[in-house]
Length: 441
Image (cartoon, one colour):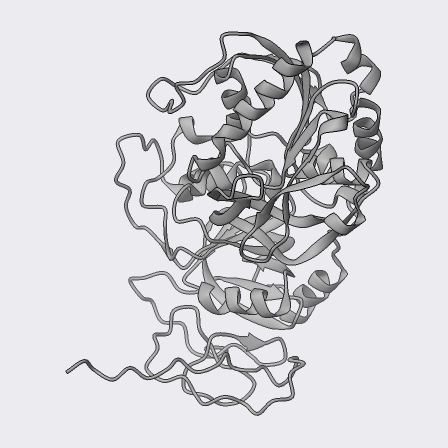
């Protein structure tokens, strides 16, 4: 006979700061004490405390232990305080907390410029077991504000590993915390939406001060692209390594593609090069007239961080280029194209972050498992006549792709290079090549 399983209780409410008025759920019994302290109300074991309640071990005599004790806090703008253990850099940092559902690829996530201004919480509980290596970098540095994980691996096991995750983050001055209930935080983000948080290892700072920092910090309407774009144009020549190449249908023609760097990932450039493209990368503020003077076969507007409405100069650039040469927009580029066509974008409740999002191509019915990383989306109802919604996210029916044949453009809300993630959507680069090829005829 199968054993009887009791259902998990609901998330405990924090009476001092929580907005819900429903009765408090029953106590959670039998759970470990990893990163968990008392709430305002009395329970045997819970996941966090409010700013108003003191830490469980406050005033207790210091006792030496052979393991690390909690030495860091995550304070969210809703007033919850999550005790944790630190790794990587020390200090105090503010950011928007988002969760990522990828099972692998934490190094690519750390170096994705689209995470600028954010703390990334990994829902996969075990992180760090493969270490890091120089080949998996998606940009020249880490742009995210911090990393939040459940378990930090105490050892690494991978033939490509050159250093541990802790060493890697310490060198790059990126904060990390572990031994915190990431499932409970993820539930909170799903129910309440993305929240601003403060990570701190500074014990001299009070919870109330950190909460005030979280409440006063804003990410909506902030230009984050200017902090991640390149300083000057450059040529990119590297292709996907032969040991990793999976596409046998590469074009025999060469196409010159200018890539606007709004925070472009290296593997987007590698995939373009592998499809036979000569690539020139330009800064986000580069004049459209200078790009058109290069007589490119196509222009790619890359991924990037933040709010597309905060970068009107980028929208203007897209408007000046669309219709003159074939155009491909990815993620932020997709949103900028939507605005350039007269459409509207909006902030999602908690965004899409992960390598396992199902997307359907409305033209063929094909379903791809895609890699996504964005907090904003295009409202398809706001787009002008002639623009076709080619892809939808099957999790929430949001717009995931557009084409406008009259203007020779295509765009995807997700990442066809999928680093990390499955390679289902790599065909989009071939579609862009066909768009440029047909424009030559």
